[in-house]
Image 1 (cartoon, rainbow, N blue to C red):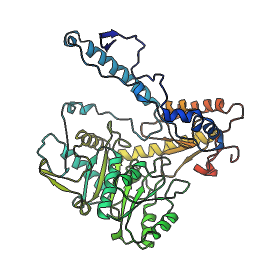
Image 2: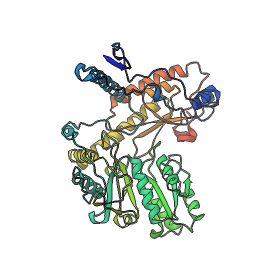
Image 3: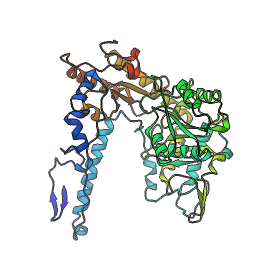
Image 4: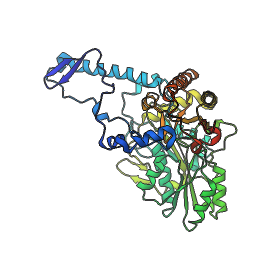
Length: 481
């Protein structure tokens, strides 16, 4: 294998792995924590021993492992050295991706997909800039696919074609940014209410739009506490309410009770003309419609918008999402753009035109029945994981109608990174997706049990108490087991 440098190409050893993690200097802010003021020092050690909350552990500094871009040599066109080098890098990177995919459990991405049939379209720069429903002068677009996908979701959430407006976003965060922006445009003096366990993008939106934001307490499940919500509404009765309702919280997978939120608003004196509800359904927004006992997300209720991610439950190789709102709300945002010969009410100008095709392809292949089967599989496997953890004496919680299993945070960060777990304080979680089968869950639990026997071998270090995080009934610490 060849590597390029100032003097030309040189042969790299066979063991070279451009994607491998190299030893690196620790960033200054993290180094200070590791010296005793954070997760890696004495305070962090006490937290890991059950004496407090674990601190934030930042990821590795990618600058130490980045792949530099080198100018091609004058004779590269003839020698092919640069092409050979890049081919080697990509081949090894593919091996790394394959390996990392085998140990992916902590983030809500469905990695089980095959879009080989769409490879023929990768030669085109497809851009859906502007309004999805009005063509622009740029002819290389996929609006016909995009509107087909939007109509599918409109049927799912029970709103007529003539009554909705929406678009395919570049990610789930953009859906939240757009939904909350619409709410602010409808109520410029409105207050944004969001539970403390809402996705961080909701609070990012409040900062970006300079909105007053009130954080609402949550129940132990992670669901919004409507008693606290009511108290905060009554303290601000003079201003309209803009609410972010979670259809599956980030860490615990809790689903806010939409009907109770609406009832609380009404009981607090807010008419339907004085509130706007955005439903953040990043993951569970597409799962809930296929669960019989689940609360319904529907535009027949007084909600303003719904967003979901396309790269999560659907399974799309690039981040994307779907945002749908009411047509009568969008006029406050939409503007004619002569340069495009179209209108635009989106957050971004240019939008990935390949994403709608990927979504259209999957929705056509699976349909409602296919998604229903996958939802049932995920819920069944999530219960299996929770039961295995509890049988092993590991604190664990699974909310009803959720596929997110919350459990004690592993003591060893290397283990956390190996399985790509998402952690917060003393808890971690596994999000059981269609690509996560029983065999992978067994491998994970068996390895965790083996590691715990080392971490807690001599009895001087105990697993943390999670009663505050997931409830005493789900905690297996020495005090509660």
